[in-house]
Image (cartoon, rainbow, N blue to C red):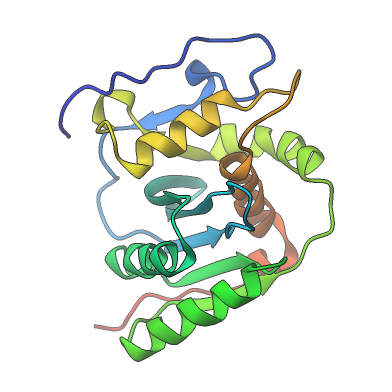
Length: 206
C-alpha cells in the first residue's frame, strides 16, 4: 500500500479514539460488498472541514475505503465529494443538511446525475448535541468500522488527515476540529436508524 505513515499520534489522556482501539484492515474481503454507503458533514465556515467517509459493507463490518477531508473552498470540496462517490461507485450518500449542507447536497446531486452516477443523495437535519452524539456513538464505530492499517496510509493524503483528526478528539478538553468523529457518528446513526434498516440497496443486475 505504500510508504509507512509517520503521523502516529502521541497518546493523550482523554482521547476518545485511541489508535490501538480501532479495527484495521490491509485488503477488503473477497467478493462484492453488500453496499457502498457514504455520509457527508459539509463545512460551515470558520475553519471547518468538509468530511465525507465512504464505507464498503460486508455483513456487520464496515470498511472505510475512501475519504474526503478538506477545508478548501466549497467549489473545490464539492468536486472532491463527487469524485469520491464516483470512484467508489457509492449507492447512497446522506448529507447533514444544517446550514450549508443543503446547498452542498443539492449541488453534488446535480453533478452526479449529470454524470450518470447511480448514487442517491439524501439529507438529514439534526439538532442533537454534537459532543453527546460523538461520544455515545463511538462504541458502535469501534465495534463495526475497520480503518486502513497504519502502514497503508500514505502521508499527506486526506485519509491521513482524517485519521489525525480522529486520534486528536478528546473528551477532557476543547477540540479544534470535531468534523471527523461527527461524520462517523452520523454514519453510525444512519446504520442503526429505522431508515437505514429499511433501506434496500440491491446489486446491479449486470
